[in-house]
Length: 305
Image (cartoon, rainbow, N blue to C red; front, top):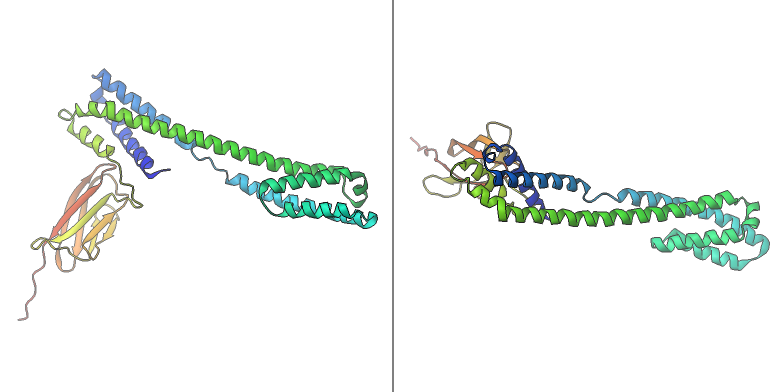
């Protein structure tokens, strides 16, 4: 899934949670209530469709690998019977055809292996009455053919799953685009009208509306530590969260990052051996990205007495 699509979905889920927790303001506003319900219903549709995305086909590939191994094994049984027949009849044209089919069955693209498998089956069927004395029964040939049918059935099933995945992906992306347009054209304007009466709802909504940048790493909090007097970056040290076990190291350039930081109010503890330890309270809403600048006061320099 494209990173931007994933970011939109995360945004929609956050908005869904915010609206579910703040339904009361819309009870007296039929238009807003209808829009909120429409958005929530589309989010439920999105969740159901997400489950159907990219149904796996690896199990089919693994199953066919096993079937091809069994096909080769059974073909080798037929090889023994045909070689015995050739030894008794001197039908070397039969031996030439056998070797061609066997070579293609053992390696190459699937279609060629399957076609050669059927050609070998037809060849053995033609000589079945003679091959039976060498241990190749009609039942064995039927079992050999069934392997080919099972392989073809798996290939067809794999194509059906791939095609359905493509249809599901298009339907899913269309719904994502539809939700995005709905937010721009309707719900955003509705939430704007609540900015004065319900500022916290407004702030949470638009915090959730912001998409994460498409980076390979997504940080909830980025920060820099600087000297209070000079403004210069402070190298090394730690930033820890008193309410949980999260901790980040301060880099040489005075930066720190937290990934997957929870929602709520927390106290950061900033430590460096050359500066006074400092604490700072932060508040973070779900899906919000914070950029912090924290100042530390340097410890007094000890002068020799």
